[in-house]
Length: 242
Image (cartoon, rainbow, N blue to C red; front, top):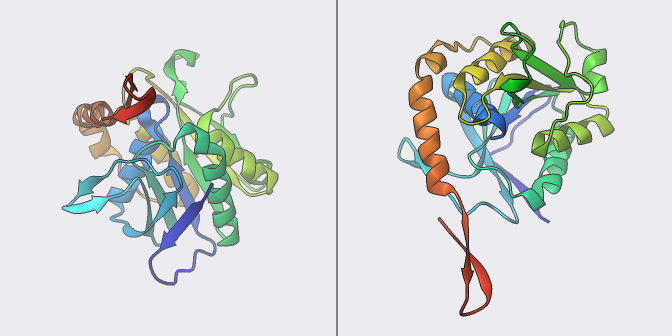
């Protein structure tokens, strides 16, 4: 499978931080990374083209917005996945993203995911973390780690796997989130931790204030782009419709 990184101009990513998150539980990763990019007014610097690129686009400020876009603000690069990579492409997508970030000499990576809120031990329990050995050996943060026996799945798990194999510092922030809906409040918890780790100052007040509207808009997007497999009886093949 082919994964290409199309970057505008000559850019130096040495000692940058890569920040990304996927749709997962509560759509927490996508909400979080998109909000950070918007608040920082990050510059669009490129896109990722995969062999099985999702056949969806949208618009932002009148311009086309592609499935996997890269943004940069100072020494932070944000990958915004408008749509989840197809399942059969998860491994290659994760491997190529890790290879690209290491070869580009990034300093570290911060990933945003979500944990099912039903796993919370009490109301004060907000977030858990899982990190590579290289990150844990070089961090001064007091982190509540993910309990033994719980699993991280999807692209996030594969990205962490490849970072661990390559002895690269990476951490996944896993706020407890509602599994049945988009959860901007959970994304806000993750962003507050990113502010500490990456020395940012992203105000989450608007994210919490607009939580209901964000949930509504995301649900509409999910409904509009949901693929339905329809059996074509005449030709005996399956087609995909939006």
